[in-house]
Amino acid sequence: MKTPNLTQIYAPTCESYFVQVPYKDQTEKLALYERHAVKGYWIFNPDAKYVLAYCFEGKKYGKPEYLTESDTLKSTVLEGLKIDLSDIWGNK
Image 1 (cartoon, rainbow, N blue to C red):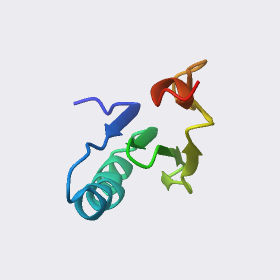
Image 2: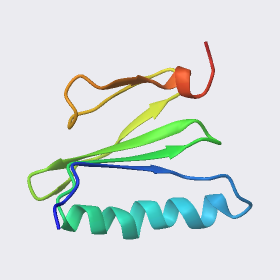
Image 3: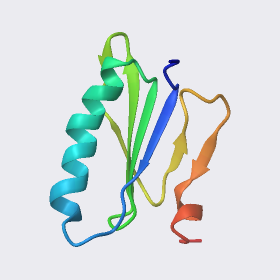
Image 4: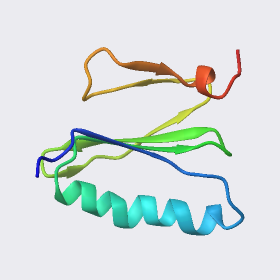
């Protein structure tokens, strides 16, 4: 099985969101993707309107880039891909 270059997680809104979803995304899934050398991993939080963008550096992920609704997400994996986060969250 080929390892994907980019994985995106869109964390859904739910009552226990702040306890369960980010914990699993930032621990279990992060470790799994890192172990398989997935080059990019984005975690979207639609409620708080931020993205954590992880980039694989050598043998592990570096510190994530924290982006808010006024930022532009630029892929380090898919050349030329830029996402204006205000377009996603309707802040224009």
